[in-house]
Length: 268
Image (cartoon, rainbow, N blue to C red; front, side, top):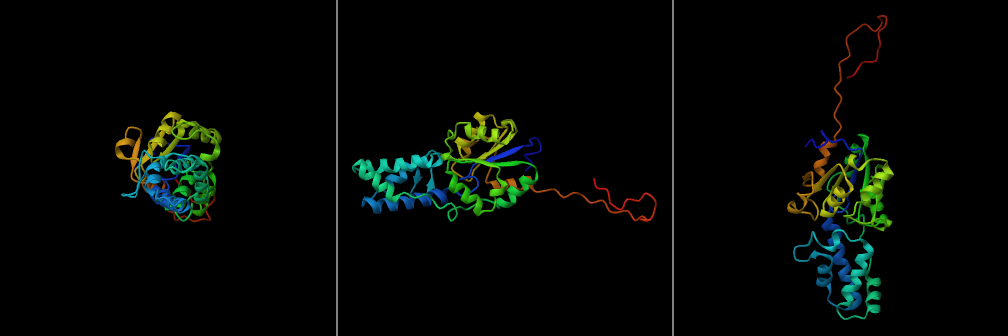
């Protein structure tokens, strides 16, 4: 794949869940853990109700593309949990207490399974002089913990997260805020994401190039109209950023004592 032959980005903005790491593993596992804890706190069988509210297909163990988990900030997911309990007839005060006892954030390290060697990919991108940023609807602390766990935090110039107070996807502000920080024009930026909201954000911000990845909740049908390019996973991007070896010109067999001889070889 030679997607950068005609487009030379100054920065690449990556979504996190479903793009860099396995969405279903992270958020599906967390939803089930949350349901079990909430059930223990209330004594009610509400696993199905919470999964339906969050948009997690319990039978297929799959996050739905139009569900709340795809682009809802954590504070709202917590509110929805209270609403699920209250809808079963529990008084709101008791529902809030039960939710507080059950609530926990997903482990950003043990539940993170990357789709490629992120350190290799980010290093190669960085060595091309291209800045790297993250735009995610997850909160800042778990996002930072994930980047640190994979040893790439020093390669990411900036990130915008759900708890930063910036309008969430599909609004353009995550991209435009990053571009302002990096001092680049959105038309010189490449956005990579797995959801319709990611690509809508890219389009509304005027991003120069939008790549949809099919490793998350998006489908071929709903990403195709918005993407300049569709790939299975970001592992496909590795080949686009592999450094090309500089051809070596053999040193001529010349007497180095000759006047004007420069012992340093010339390279093309």
